[in-house]
Image 1 (cartoon, each protein chain N blue to C red):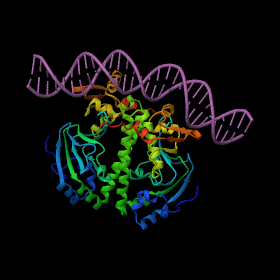
Image 2 (image 1 turned 90 degrees about the vertical axis):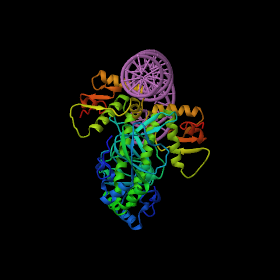
Image 3 (image 1 turned 45 degrees about the horizontal axis):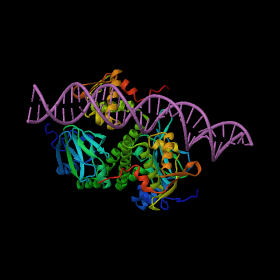
Image 4 (image 1 turned 120 degrees about the horizontal axis):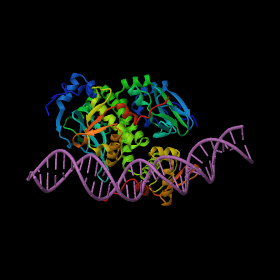
Length: 242
Length: 242
DNA sequence: GGGTTCGCTTGACGACCGTCATTGAGATGT
DNA sequence: ACATCTCAATGACGGTCGTCAAGCGAACCC
């Protein structure tokens, strides 16, 4: 992995972060106090229960947030893309981390100590409001997820997950018709994201493939091809007959 | 219902709200611009999709936040107690309401226009940080709920719900042993909160009663008696064997 | 008072989905 | 090349839980 964005000013994710409301001087404060780190897939950034010494800003790659149940099974709660800052909640509520963070792809992450963050929050009120918007959006997502888990079938939830994953990775390059992406996560992780088992995911994949809605290929069946995104969307958006 | 707390300074819920960080002058600004309203059970405060003209602060009673699916079934997402402020998310993200709010008990609520809120947020940064803490806590709750829905059985989720409801209404009056409360919501609503059906709730109640863990009595079976709270807790907290 | 409505309960049935076990494919290391 | 490991796929089985239907009680309204 090349050493991209060696500082906050040239960071490719800069405009997507909450820090974009800061002045150059304020940003310099972060840049002087950050600690960069590279993670390989599987490496953990922090664990549930660790106490929070600062926040982590994702520069590149993909970070997964997990919780573990009593038997050691993990639930993948959230995927953090470049530009996202992790740990701000624990920092603000003065509690330990409520989930574990683990790299899912080779990633670059910067650590920013809690003293730095707090002093910035105090001197620039706009920063707090930015984080508040982030939290509000995440809350909306979480409630929608709860809603979906309750009202939709495994098949509909899986279709929705695929649509979200596609949307996330294709963001700009709008192909109106179809899409082909490389899945960043395993069957097991996808299963946990929609509250089911890997077996059910496999079976659901089979059915969707038989109906020509999706195609899984490549190493580990991780290349996803969707000929028509609308057909996929029909699986979780009950068509309105107004 | 008596006309309690006729202004923000004497409001009984004052110290539980985010506004408690405001100066007297700032609080007066709210007091001058608020509009009080009383709601009877079933009355709606706002609907999903309405655009947000300000926030609502619960003074007394109980407000339920719901989402409706395509067939008109409702999912009860959250219970808002006195001191909670509703609508701050929609206000901050400049979107419409993502859920409907409805009184579950006779309630008193104050409306505060968005201009007032925004000017306070600008002039007192501490207010934004308070709301950020609120959002962080709600997010933590939401993620735990997702986690529970996935990993726990209907029985465990229901036991957990009962424990939460008891904890909420008894807050201060700590009886270590048992508890008796009046349930504020119907079977159907309880079912939707834990992602199941009223029938399954009834059957679960039956089993828990047969085992002597809980007792439902009174009008509509809405008086809940729990002889031993620890026994109830065992249903959703797998006892650790170190 | 009788009819209506609404919510709770209970039973029967069955489908969906979770559990367990087996097989196979691909990657990695010696 | 072979062994090993991990992950995906698939089949068999069973249980939980959702669906449908009927019965019941309380509250409400003409």
